[in-house]
Image 1 (tube, one colour):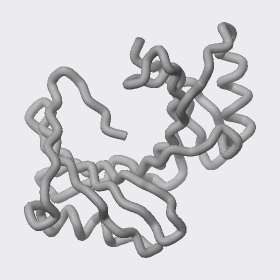
Image 2 (cartoon, rainbow, N blue to C red; image 1 turned 120 degrees about the horizontal axis):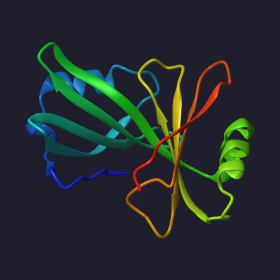
Image 3 (spheres, helix red, strand yellow; image 1 turned 90 degrees about the vertical axis):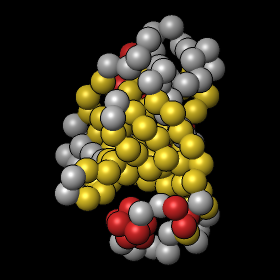
Image 4 (tube, one colour; image 1 turned 60 degrees about the vertical axis):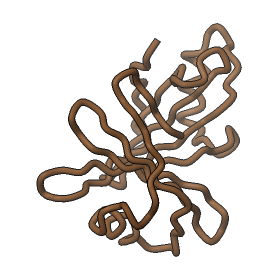
Length: 150
């Protein structure tokens, strides 16, 4: 689930080299999350940590954390999901947009820090690093198609 751009670099780091504040903000969530890996990224002068792990039920998650002057800030929590678990209002929006019937090979759900919004990214095999479709779903079931990188 690593998102790379031409100006970003990611390095795997030992847990002991991760600031305690980053670990604290990631672990300050219910559910028994266990960290499996941490990547440190520098992008446009900012430092990010991608903290990957799993919950006891096996759900694999990556938490994206930005270091700010006021401390670490969770940007989103993301996980791969199966098409059958995509909410119907989202899948209908994608089907309508997907006039060319592009085969979707991967779906990533990005839970935003507000806890009310999920951004779904739909990947096709011809562009495995960039989503073909992006859809925002709010807690009121409002669906918005978002621009994706072409």
